[in-house]
Every structure is written in structure tokens, then in C-alpha cells.
Amino acid sequence: MSAAVREATGLGLPASSDLGRAREAALKALRDFGSYETTAVGYTSGSRVLVIGPEPSAVAAARRLKSAFLECTVLASPGGPEAEPIESLPVLRAALATLEGHLGAFQATAVNADGAVDITPMAGREGGFDLVLDLGIPPALGSEIPPFGYYAPGADAQALENALTAIPDMVGEFEKPKFFAYDPAICAHGERGLSGCTRCLEVCPTAAIRSIGERIQVDPHLCQGAGSCATVCPTGALIYACPPPSVFIDALRKALRAFRQMLPDCRPGLLFHDRDAGREWLAGPGVEIPGVVVPVELEEIGSAGLESWLSALTFGAGWVALLVPANTPPSVRRALTREVELGQAVLSGMGYPAEVLSLVEEQDAARRLVMLGASGRALSLPDAGFQGFDEKRTSLGLALGHLYEHAPQRPDAVTLAPGAPFGEVLVDRDTCTLCMACAAVCPSAAITSGTESPQLVFQEANCVQCGMCAAACPEDAVRLLPRMVLAPELRSQPRILNEEQPFCCVRCGKPFATRSMMRRITEKLKGHWMYQDEVALRRLQMCEDCRVREMFAGGGQP
Image (cartoon, rainbow, N blue to C red; front, side, top):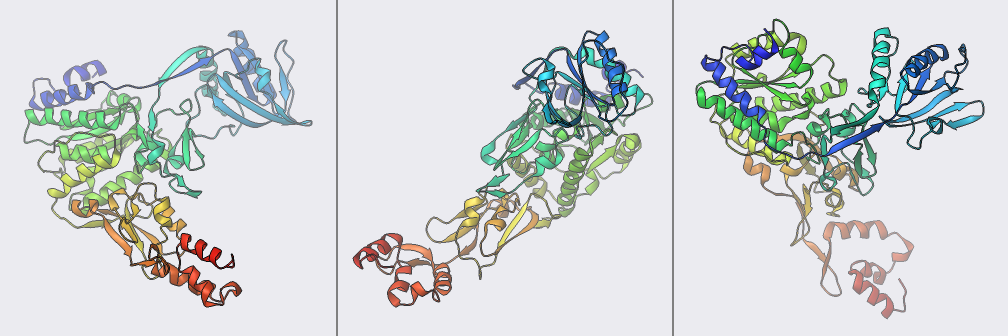
């Protein structure tokens, strides 16, 4: 069955059948995401190509590219056989040291007998080389998804031929969407010199994200929209922008409502898939997905996360499966596996079948979809109607609240695997001095100080388990416990981790410290030669203003 026929008839279902009509209504709602704005990222690429590798093969490739009117520079591996010189083909025999950039703007340095050489000026333009053909083994750039304009065919002759054919077509002006939005105000990467969350750095397959101290920076020219960074971001500082989470979640709600208005007694399964490999799989020969399955197309399979999956289950989906293509980058696959396992732990904790959220490998997808559709394990609960939000934890909290309200089991919390971005902070009250170092570095306001008296106040719904509170504690009094609080009243209710009566200045009576803090300071200093008399020890018990007044009144002696 052709792809055109599949689209017209609802992926193989007769348009006249009840399932066919219901699925087509859902697909129509999904196609109409609504309007949203995206920023375009532009590339301007000329004809300057850097060819890297053994000299004979690099020169041969450069000869092919020159015949397509491209200007080539060869960086030949030193010590190997040399090739016959070609007129107007610069050849530098040196080892590549660094290579960075993207289509239209590659910079490179090399090392030869004379030392380090910046070869970027050899491109003949300020911006550097426009394209790079890397024939080295291993390739110079090790990112799972290379930047636009970089070709590394390795030892694959067909891949080399494909690159030589594609490179001449990469001259001109190009655009792609800016796939992400970043809010540094809620980023948990670092605070006051401490390192915190690094999840986005660990899962980016294009090496587009780098640390810049307490925040991150995403290069929009290197980003290719894999989306795994937004999926694992615990605060929502990084969100996917094509479409934004609020638009996508609303589209899921409308699609499932359209389906269930036509078939109220049927809860369809949703198959999330990416635009390219997933669409190709669906249109492949012999692929007939069960009638109860509604395919949901994403830009990339990693671009939707737990808040979207669980929201779909509350809107009327019986189960959600993610179609993972065979060529999915390992970092994206790991991120999806970890997030799905987190979702399964939460669902199981509420008594739901874990398999209502699952990964489906492309090579086994048809069989798995049939099994899911026939398992009889689909969820059955009233449909929710909340709208989507771009704030990740808001949407997730709404989905969890609805699932918990109708759950077969309602535990207060479920334990999660180490490293999960949800959990509580535990404080040893015997060693905590309420110095507030943990509250000072908390990036998500999960830990705050009391307003009326010395207190540590904790709101678990905000905690991302970044660990900065534990790192900042001078008394080693803080530890983390990964878990998901399911009871809504406990998730949002502030609770006191530690409190005590304030210590008041012995001169003016103003509270300025805690009693435990004053006791610890006194114990540490009582053996110091400067604090052997009662006057000096008494000054420790004064606020800053009174201590200064006392010192001046006593002639400035400590």
C-alpha cells in the first residue's frame, strides 16, 4: 500500500470503519498544532573546502571537488606518501590539532615541525572554511551527530561517494529552526562556584551545549533538534520549541478528545515517532499498524518527555509507545530509556501496568504494537482536560495529580533510582547549624530560609536533586533521597527541615544567629589565645553593630 493511500485512508484502515474515522479525526487534530513562533538560524556557505586525510586520497577527493568549481585546501597527514601536485591546490603536510565550527564557519589549527599553525587563513576568507571533508580514521570530530557541512565517510567507499556528490550542493544560504529556548534564571547547572546539574551536557549528541560557569550555552548552529536536552532538563530551563510543550500537549488533548468523541469506549494507543525514520517505517512495505494505534509525529523522538507522555495517558490514551529508530544516537537512546524507566516506576507505584509506557525498537515494532493493542492492559480512567504549559513541572504535576486521583493504589511516594531529578532533602538536625548555605545555592527555591525565625523550609515539588545543597553544607548535614511524592498535598506543601530559637545579642537583644551556631563557634574559639578572657568571649555573643561599638569603647582591643 502506498504512503499516499495510507494517509488518505488513515494508515491502512478503511475510511468508512469506525476506527478509521476516529483515527483520522485524531490525525487531523495532530496535523493542526496551532500557531507558534520560531526563530530561524541561518547559514551562509561558500565554495571553500578543507580536505583532511592521507595525501593521495585527500588530493584525489580535492580534484573531484575542484571539478565542481569548489576551492579546496588539503591538510595531509604527515609522514605518509605524497601525491602529484595539482596547480592551485594548496597542500599543507601537518597533523590536525583542532577543528571546530559548522557550515560556513569552520576553523582549524595544525601542528608541523615548526609548531602550531592556524590554517583558517588558508581558506582565503575571514569566516574560515565553508565545508570539511574528513578522510581521517578515526574522524576529527567525535560527536554522535556531526555539524552541518562536515563529512566523515571513514573507510566506506559509498559514503565517500555520497559526500563528494552532496558537498557541491551545500553552497548557498540555508535556514533551519532554532529548536530550543533557554531560561538561565531557572537553570540548575551551578551556583556560587558549585557544580550542579549536567544532564543536558551528557545527552546532547551534537556537542552543541557547553558549560560557561554557573550556566550553559547552546550553539544554535550546532543544535540539530535531537531534543534529549529538553527531555532530561529537570527544571524546564531548556524546552523544545518546535513546537513548544504547551502547544504539543494541547494537540495531544485535542486529538484524543476527537478520537474518543467518536469511540467513547475505546482508548487508543499512541505511537510517538520521529519525522524522518518513523514516517519512513510507517510507509514501509508490509507495515500495518493495529487500528487502535494513533501515530504521533515529532520532529525527533527525543523531543517529548515525561510530562507529554503522562499527559497523553490522562487525556484518554490507553498506552504510549516510543518508536526508537535503529540510527538513534546512543546518548538519546540512553536518555529516553532512563526517562521511560522513571515513568514506569511512577506508574507502577500507583498500581498501573508499567507497560502502558514503553520503548519500541524499530525492528520489532510491528509485533510489539500488536501485543500492546491486544494486551488488555490499557488504562481506564476519566479523561482529564487541563491545558498544556511550557513550565515542565506544572504540566507534570497536573498529569500526576489526575493519575493519582484515579489510581488503583495511592502511596504517598515511590522510591526512584539514584540520579533521578525528583526527591527530598534530609537534614541532620544534630549537626545542622542553620547557616543557610544550602538555601543560598538552591537553584529552584526548593530550600528557603524562614522569615520569622531560623528555619530551613523545603518544598519537594521544586527539588531537582542537583546536589548543590549537600556540596555547600559545611557540616555535611545534608543528604538526598530520590523519590516521587505522589500525594498532591505533600508535593506542594512546604515543610520544615530544621528550626531552632534564635540567639540574641547580649548587648542589644537583636537576634543575629542560631544557638547551635553560637555554641559551635564558641567551642572552636575558646582555646584560641585571643579569646581567653570573658570580655572577648562576650563580644562573640554580640551582633555586628554592638561588637564594633564595644571595641571602640574599649580602645579598639579585640
